[in-house]
Image (cartoon, rainbow, N blue to C red; front, side, top):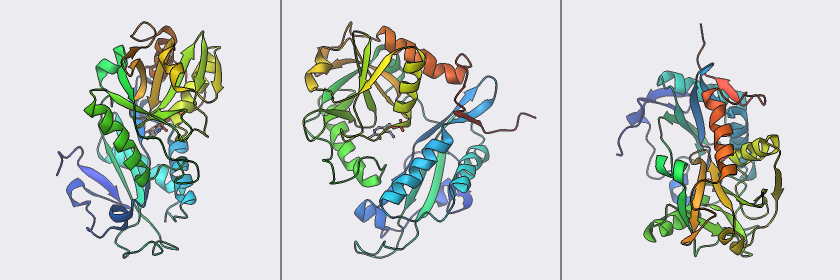
Length: 312
Ligand code: PMP
């Protein structure tokens, strides 16, 4: 087993030791990818202590992903929100990456079997640093465009955060690694920019910010929504429209964002330098505002932070 990242895990309604949270080899989700999940972060803030970032939106998306696949999660959204907080507290974490997952367990073989069945649910919470590395946060990541396209519309729904979709992400990410890139970017079935293996993308030129639309085979990220909101707050125009591949080569700045990757500059695409080849000024501003939410410099006027521990 990989190194144990935390002591306890929330497992079908109970908090149990990490090493006891195991599944049977006939678990449906292992065979058929039948799981939906979330990635959520909690940050240690100066004023409110540990806070979960956009808890409601993430767990709402968990239920949306389940709904798309006609899965029944045997808990309410409030219960899952509560359980998310409970497992952070149980592990006494100051900051955390939280991974709720709903999946079909050992319900038998076959593709019709899940119909009408309930899922199992677990929630892990553990400390996890910068996904693309601290150095990438500062100086940017070298990205490469993947030879793999994202899923075509009406094949598998990219708007659902489902386990099976991450086979596509693994192809993209591992190809990038093989070519020596920090992350891979995929085009959609029409040849337009889609997203990174686990991040949404923003391309900036002449102070106009464009991000790929929901119709470009993306998972519409909660960080993407956060970045759009912060950019508008800063007075920038943000467009959601198709981005041709070559726009990345001539961009002034590119940034990638996601819960794990946070807000990361892209300094090159396919070996072509983006802008000045480091963190551009607008990306730096977005990063300041984004991380400002957690270091107390950006007031949380959107109610995005949920405190985990009682201050008393
Ligand atoms: N696209 C993909 C494929 C992802 O896995 C993620 C990470 N969940 C994102 C985009 C960004 O989504 P979010 O900002 O909600 O984490």
